[in-house]
Amino acid sequence: MDSNHYCLRDASKEIRLFDLVSANEQESAQGRIRRAILSDAPPFVAVSHVWGDKSNDRSVRLESSCGTKYAQISMNLEAFFIRLIGLDSTTLPQTWLKGSRLPLWVDMICINQMDVAEKALQIPLMREIYSQASSVIIWINEDDSRIGQAFQYLRHLVANKTTTEIADIWTLFDPDGWEALKYLLDCSWFHRRWVLQEFAVPKDAVFLCGSDAMSIDDLFRGIDMAASVLIARPRKFKILHPAHTGSLRPAPALRELRKHYAEPDYHVSLLWLLEHFRSTTATLAHDQVYSLLGLCSSKEVAGNPIRYDLEPEETYKTFVETHARLYNNLEFLGLCTAAQRDSVCSGSVDEFVSRPFAGPSWVPNWHSERLQRCLGLNDYGTNLKFFNASDRIPMTALFRHNELEVTGVWLDRILSIGRFCRLERRHELIDPNSRLFQEYFDFWTSVAAAERIMPYRDKKHLAETIARTLSLLGIYLNPMPVLADIPDMFCRWCRGSNLGRQLAEYGLKPKNATNLEGERVFMGMRRLTAWEPFITESGFIGLARGNSSVGDEIWLVGGCSVPLLLSPQTEDPAGFKVNGEVFFDGFMFGEAMRMDEFGDTSVQQITLV
Image (cartoon, rainbow, N blue to C red; front, top):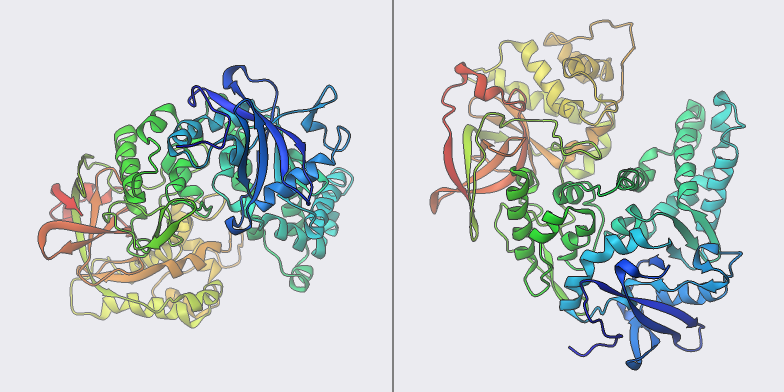
């Protein structure tokens, strides 16, 4: 393919560097481009930016020994070049060395975006590129007064951190500054998947908005302080100016990622990254995977070759097969729901179309905005799982084109599903006195009135199960409580409400009604809108992902830490479609394999399609 770039002799070892010469609004930016062996490259600055709307592309004039050529750049990158020309060694010292402006590495220019083969060789180098750069400039936006106000507020918090008494720390809260900070963290850069490696591995990085720069360390120190100030406000002030730390959501994840990747040769599994940063986006469906490879081990990189010539479904299948082989688990099955098989973008970066996802049910669609997971969580920096439902079931995985043969144990079948917790009722889940909770209680306690086998010892046992199920075992509380304390904590949360009285009538009451120690708000309750309550044929209660159906079966599958919901296929009695994870109290920690009274727990080979 004809290249608009200075030719690389070996794209697996060499990079291009860009020397900016001029940039203004009247004509194309100009610069020189040269190549260098990455392991022996001169000092350079890497740029992290958001490409933006392709319809507003500009061009840059490139001079090299290959002649004069032009490459497309975004309007946002052109704005950065124009701004950079006006910043000297005093205003932005990170881009200067001994009186000379350092060359730049910018993905949009230094990788030929039209050459698929070259991209396949250059993308795996990006971790080394960003870690080797003298500094990384994170270009947030051209002049924006709200971002400038956010920087100013963060500087104010950092400057006053050591001089403000703990009791008075809340006085540093500024409603306007808080709104500006929310605006900053809502900028596209914080939600772009490619920036994860651009942000996590550099030795030094600075955020730049117009001419206003802030170091990465100051930004996160300020954000930590903003969270502390917010929490410390008196109750009456919280009512007057409602705000919550959820607005800071992108920041802690990025900070923790950067902290861990400061360690040499640190990496986590690709599945861990895909799961924890699933809210970030990439234009091409392939890049949901490829953009994270720079943070993975060499074995995982080798197992996921960059192939833009394949459809996204093939890329995702390659990933799960590699994951199963390297990590000997099938944790990705918990993300495979009917809702996330909605659509995927296929085609090139210039011409892509959205179409229905065509992969098998056991392959997660990483491009879907409906990809959700709650149960298979683990801490930053680890690959440990909280649940171990399939504790004693051997893990097997035989991949045959669109089929996956696994080992499993059948548990039960769904008899009835409650569909009353709709998205528009989400606000009710913060109030234990809402009608919605009574509907949960009434639905599940109908088990006791039904004329069939009652699996719970007594009403109190059922009430405890309801408390554990509604709270998802409190896995979103921080710090994580002792599991045996969850029913009592839940009772304290709903004490005095209709739900609390109903649980009390079933025998579940707070152990000490006057002692409030350990009482917490179950902040994760709103997550229930992603689940549907069910009752099984044996009378058990639980929660399944949306789009579940009567007749779906609950299985423990070897290699997956949570129970799965599988839909039998009429055309193939041995075939099942995967419908995601299930919360099934009493079976989350391998209890079924240790319960002689549960019945047949024989291991079977089943096929997922």
